[in-house]
Amino acid sequence: QVQLVDSGGGLVQAGGSLRLSCAASGRTFSRDSMGWFRQAPGKEREFVASIGWNAGRTVYADSVKGRFTISRDNAKNTVYLQMNSLKPEDTAVYYCAVRLAFTTEYRYWGQGTQVTVSS
Image (cartoon, rainbow, N blue to C red; front, side):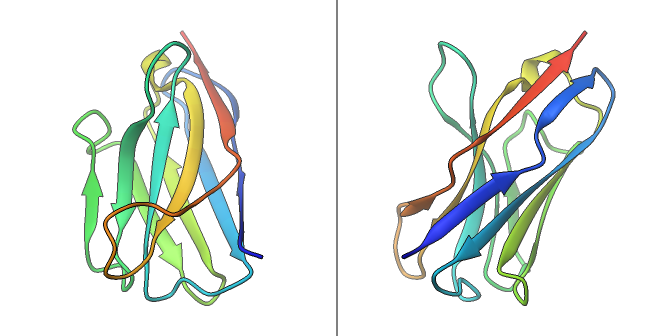
């Protein structure tokens, strides 16, 4: 059974940093893309960042470019999101997800981890 476990969220002051982790189990995703999404209260879920299977291609939402960095460790079946210079508008539940190779939709999702940025 595939399982993604998100962790690393918490409460941080504006300008601070957090590092989110997402550990996958049940199968390896070394050939698949992985991404992070977030959902703030009363808003739709939005894309944050994604990383290709070989970490050679990363994509970021404009709102986080230059502040967030996505990375992965295929040996650990884990994807990370380093978040720096956090802003109150980054407050949301963050979810990791996996998009299988040669598909267009994210199939597997983590349970989410809460990130709260105080002003």
